[in-house]
Image (cartoon, rainbow, N blue to C red; front, side):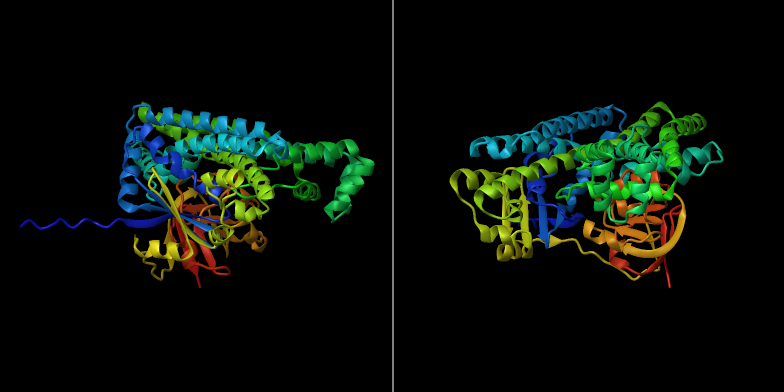
Length: 519
C-alpha cells in the first residue's frame, strides 16, 4: 500500500507592520491583488494573504513559498530587457492619476445631501479605483525590492562591477543615490517650494514679518494677520486648503493652518529663506548636470541604461502613487464619517467595517457594534482572492493557532547591517518613531529608527542626523527623503527596532551600511 505524501504546511511571515491604518485601506487589497498580478504576466503563485491586527497595528503576512516565487518572477521580468518594467510603471502612474482625479472630484460633493443608495454607490466607485491603483502598483513599487532587495542589489552590484572593471575613481555608495534620484519633483517638494516663496513674501513685508517674529502663539499670528494683512492671510489659507492632505497617510490628521504658520515662523526667524529658495530652484538643474556627467563616465550598455532610468521612475512613482493614495484615503474616510453619522455609531467603529458591510449596514440596518469594537484590538483577515474571512477575538486566536509561522531569531549583536540608501556618517541617540504620536520625542540630531517611514513622519525625519529602517530598499520612502535631506540612511536592517531602544547611542556608517551600537 503506497504511503500518503506528507503535504508541507504553509509557513507564514510578517512582511510589513503598518500603524495608523484601518479596514478601508487593507481589506480591499484582497479584491484585485492576485488578479492584477496575473494580468501583469506574473502568474498565480500568490494565492492568499493574511492581515493580523493587534492594538491598531496591521501586520501584513505572506506565505513564504508564494512570496519568494512571486518576487523572483518580478525580478526576472524587470531585468529581462523586454520593456515589461517600463510598461507596468507607466500604467501604475496612469491608474494612480485616475484615482487622484476621481478623489478630487468627490471632494466637492456634499455627502450629507446624498441618499443612502447614492452614498454607497459613490463610495464603491472610489474603492474600485483604489483597488486598481493599489493592486497594480504592488509589483514594481514595492514587491520588486521587498524583503531581499533583488532589484536594488542587482543595480548596485552592476554599478560596483562597472566602476571596478573600468578603473573609475568613483565610490559606488555615493554614485548610486545620484543616478537613481528622479528629475521630477514629488508633491512634497512642490509644496516645499511654494511654501518657501510664501515665507519669502512674508519676510520681505516688514509688517507681516514683525507679526511672525514677535508672536510665539500662532493663533495670535492669525488674529493679527486678519486685522492688518487680510489679503496675505487669504493666501496662506489657500495654501493650506491646497495641501492639507499632504501627510495624511491612511487616517490623518490633516494639516491645519497652524502647522504651516509654525513652518513659516521658523523660516522667518532663521532668516535663511533666500538661500533655501535658491537651492530649491536650482536643485534639479544641478542634479541633471551631475547625472549626465556620471552617466557619461560610466557608459552603461543600453539595457542597464534603461534599467537605471526605470529605477529613477520607480523612486518618483513610489512617492506619487502613495500621495494619490493618501488623498484618496482622506476622501474615503469622509464617506466613512458620513456613514457613521447616519448609523449613530462612532467613526472608529465604522472604519473597521468591510467593504460589503457598509452597504448592508446603511441599506439593511445590519451591523454588529461589538464585533466592530473588537477588530482594532485583535482581529485577522485571511483572503484567498475568492473570499475574505474576518475573525476577531477568540476566533482570531483559534485561526492563528492553526497557522505556522517563520521563526524569527534575534541574537545580541554589536552592530547591524543593511543597505546604504544615502551615504555619510553620524552619531547620536536613538529614537524609535513609528507613528505621528511618537514624533514629539524626536530632537534635532537624534538617530531616527523605524520599521518603515511614510510622509506623515517627514517632520521627524527632518530633525534626524541619520535614519535607519527595518525594511525597504534603495528606492524606499526613507531612502528618497534621506537623499533630499542629505543625511545618512541605512535601510533593510530587519531588526533595528527590535535590538535598539530609545536612548541607546549608535554610530551610523551609511557608506558601509553599518549601524554600530556604542556602549
